Image 1 (tube, helix red, strand yellow):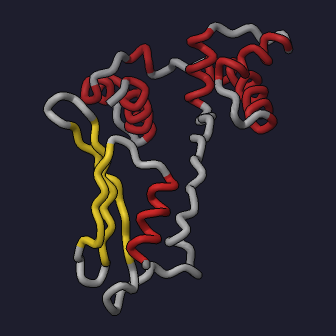
Image 2: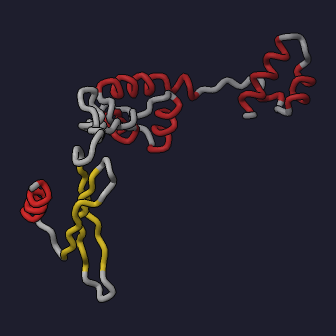
Image 3: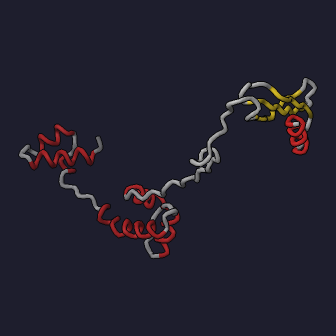
Length: 173
């Protein structure tokens, strides 16, 4: 528990009728701290108000950039004090939301094709491998979704788009 919180509890106990000495001994705080009033919250109020107005105007700017605006207005702050006030006031830059890409199969109008008979739905994929001598191989595999049978496999060092179309026309024919 922080010293400030213990002092608040000691003040509360004193207000309830417990002596200052007893409350301070129980909560392990100095008696001189009971009368202490923080000056920073009063001193920071105009800075917080200015920071809030700038953060509403520029929601993507953080404490560092707002500090520059404050300096232009004549309010000179150190880096650490500006960061402390910014965090204490709860002024956080909202996280950037990434835009989710729409999956064409995920849209409500599109349903994935479900094979109900042989040769109704085919799928093709490229598989990459390498030989012992380091030569790269590219394999085009074409399968029937219903029977899970391989219709065609083409292995080459490079398979261009024209070759894929040619293979698909051969298998269709």
